[in-house]
Length: 319
Image 1: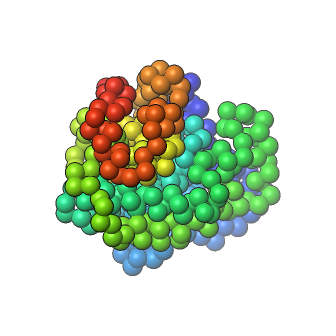
Image 2: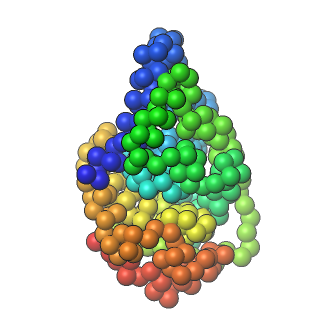
């Protein structure tokens, strides 16, 4: 049941656009060939059209992971496909928008490439994620999927109503696509600024929940840095658990590598991880309520993890 629910959001984007095509708008776009991404875009560093990318991949998380990876010049199919379950605010829980989860993965991957020192790369991934989260919050006045779209995916009548309202404007006028188009350049700019942020108070040996949980699943150093920005509810922002997002992504990455070209939505283990998490937290998902703390600095979070903070939960997520 959970896996079917997780497919709803992707189908929603596609069905909304399909309905508009019937109305005529999408047909014009399709016939003009504007929905296709040119193969030389990466080579020539041509900025991608966020709406076209969104239409192609169907998930906000995948869209922004791809957009930023393209901007940094390093596309990674399996890693991007594995980001699909993070859409809908993390497995359709409607917490942090999938655009943020996808952007954070791309920022982490770029941090790993830029900084030879693993500890510096980890700290800078978290720092850059803070910039990205702040940028998104300025644009939307929130970070949560539920606030952005204004309805609950589990309420079918509201979902249907939203789809019908989207039809007249065509696939290029769906709310999430409009937001993607507006925020994409801001996301890229904030990511670059964050990765260039000079900070003197970064801990020498930063440890975080997200990196630790994927390490326990068998992640390499690059994957550990890639998810580092999820720490402390994403950039230490105190939202939905970053370790949960990291565990789902790593599990989906392993699955996608065994099933090339497939979407991480189809990874059956993602639902098992979410269920085990909810069983352990009594269905609580927010970092401060689970950890009992709000982390002001990377050093604060490092000390918490060093002192076995959330140790039991991290072990459950790594099983």
